[in-house]
Image (cartoon, rainbow, N blue to C red; front, side, top):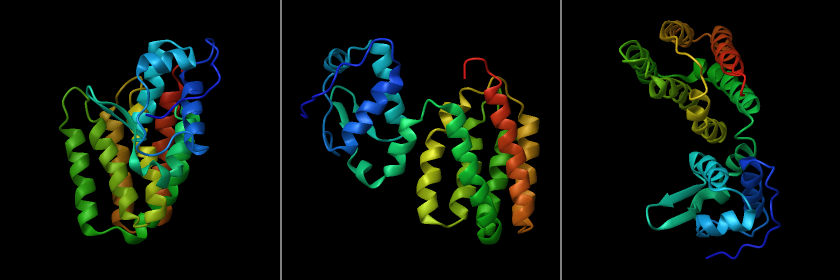
Length: 228
């Protein structure tokens, strides 16, 4: 088990400071892939924070697939963390929702233009199925199909370097998705269909415009919350 040596974190800070401290330990070699973290009680004492604050930080790391929590087996740093520096960068800002949304927009707008040039008929069929699934969803519970839609486009761009980045951002999809104050499936279907049609027509400019329209709408809806 790794031995922690750290300065106590002030009680007035939030889970972001815990998150940043753990990330910095990864970056300076105090923590390494495969290391087992101390117990929650030990971490609470070391960081001088409450259990909810610690669990929020660990939850963010788990969402980004940087740690794995095993039932009755402890919490471990994932083995592949060292080859995914973008995950660490994202982890440092995971609670900065505006920044996460803007980073996602930056990457997806570039990816959708590449997808318009490279997308296959199979990918187009997959996109169409997600739109149908959203339309058939019950109680507006269609978050996973929305995520699939964006993931298919990212992968259809067929660029492994950028895919690694967008995959990390898509891990934050559930976090931003949970912040949407209300669902409007008709608008989601309208936006997704417009993106799909632009991609089907192999039109990168229109694909960019339709994706920007969609992501801007989502950003405005999330940031309209008073607690973001």
